[in-house]
Image 1 (cartoon, helix red, strand yellow):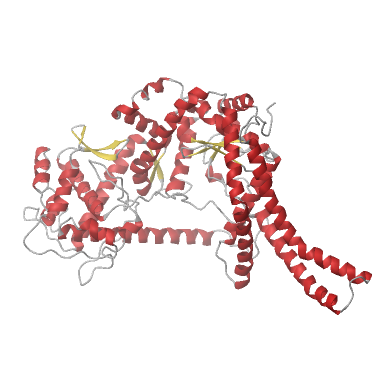
Image 2 (cartoon, rainbow, N blue to C red; image 1 turned 90 degrees about the vertical axis):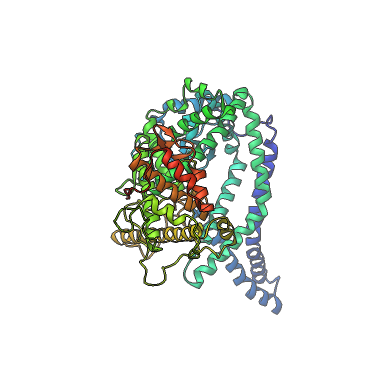
Length: 639
C-alpha cells in the first residue's frame, strides 16, 4: 500500500510543512481577532455579575462593548460562511472513468506504488499541454452538467464520497504525441505530488487558501442594493487581507511541495524524463500552432474539428519533416502511443476537441446546425473554401459601399465580383483617392454595408500564412482607425486607396461582430424565457458563483488593418484561382488554409499581394496570375 505524506529524504518537505503551519497561523490569528471583543465582553459581564467590576465606567464599557462584540461575531460568522460555502474554481476537463482507460489507471497506480505515494482518486483530460493535481473534494463540486463529457463512453465522475487524493489532470496532446514510457516519465513528478497533498497541514492550508480565493471571487460579483454591496465588500476586504498575510507563505509552501515531489520522482525514469521534456516543448509548440492556425478559422465558421489531438500528431510530424532541429522525432511514431491506453481514443479525442472549442472560442456545449463537427478530410472544402468566399464577399460589399465601379474589361453586369475590379481600384492613379473612413454608418445616400449573414459564414478571420488568407481578427483591432496611433503607423506605408479600403473592412468586421454578439444575446435571453423562471430565494445548496463561463481563454491575436486587407485580397485571388484555373483549397498542418495549384502549395503569393497594397503596383501580381493561368476578369462565386 502506498504511503502518504512526505518523507524526511525530500529536500522541500520540512520547508513546505513549516510554511503550511505559517498559513494556518494566519487563520488562527484572524479567529483570535474575531473572538477578542467577545472575550472582553464576557469578562466585563461576568465581572459585573460577581461585583468585581462595578461602577459607572464599567457599566458604560459593558453597554458599548457587548453590541460591538456581537456585531464582530456576526461579521466573522458571515465571512466564515462565505469562505466555507464558496465554490473553489475547478478546471473544465473531460473526466475519464476507469472502465474507459483501465491500462492508463493501471500505469498511474503502478507509478504511485513505485513512488510510495497515494494513487490519484481519478483521471481527467484537459485540452492543454500541461498536467497537474487538482483537489475536487469540496462539497460544492457536484456532478458536472452532462454536456461537459458529451457522448463519451465510460466518461463520468468517480463515485460519490470521493477520497482525499486529488484528481490527476493530464494534457490530452501528451496522450497522442508521447509514447507510453515518455508519458510515465513526465507524469512521475506530478503523481509524486499526491504525497504532500495527503499531509494534513498542507491539505488544510490549501483548503483555507482556496476558500479565501473563492470568497474574493464571490465578493467581486456585481450586486444590486447598497446592503448587499456593503456586506460583500466587507467580506472581500477581510478575505483579501488574509490572503495578503499568507501570500508569501503559500508561494514558499508550493515551492517546497514541488521540490519534494521532484526529489521523490528522481528515482523513476529519470533519464527518460530528460528526453521526454523535449517532447513537452515540441507538443506545446505544435498544439498552439494547431489551435491558432487551423482550429480557430473553423470555430469562427461554426465548425469544430473533432480530432484535434490526432491533428497535433500530424502537425508535429510535418514539423519534424521540415525542421532539421526536429529530426529523429518522427522515428518515435513506431513505438506505442500513450493514447492506446484508452479504450476508445476517438471518442475521447472528440470530447476534448469540443471542450477545446468551448474553452478557447466559447462555442455551444452541443452540436447543432450552426455548430457541427468537421473531419480533417472535409476541412478544405467546408472551412477553407467557405472562408475564402466569405472574405471575398465582404471585400466586394465594401467596394459597393465605396461606389467602386466595375473595371473596363469586366462583364457587363454592374459591380461584378471579379478580381480585376479589386486590382484596378487598388492601382495607384494620378487622381486623389478618398481618405480613410472610420468605422460607422456610411455617410450620405450611398448604400449601407451588407449586414452579417446568418449562416455562420461571416467570420473571415484566419491565421497568417504565405499562400492564403491568414492572421486572426481581434475585435479591438477593428476599432476606429485614426484614433489609434498604431493603426495610423500601420497604414502609413500603404496607398490612400488601400488605407480607405482597410478602414472600411475593419468597420464591416466590427458590424458583423456586433450583430453576432447581439444575436447570441437574444438567443440566450429566449432560452432563459423558455426555461424555468428563477426563484426569488436562492438555493442554499447552490454555489455562490459559476466558474463555467466560457470561453475562459479566448484566442485573440490582433491583426493589423494592413494584414486584414492583405488577407481579403489574397482570399479573392484564391477564389479566382479555384474558379478559373482549377486550383483547390488545402490544409497545411502548420500554416492552416493554403492554396494548391496543380497539387503544389502556392507559397509565393504573399509578396505580390503586399506590393499591390503598399505600392499600388499590380504588375507582379498580374504576372503571377498569368503564369498560373488565372483569369482575373472572370466573375467568382461568392457565398
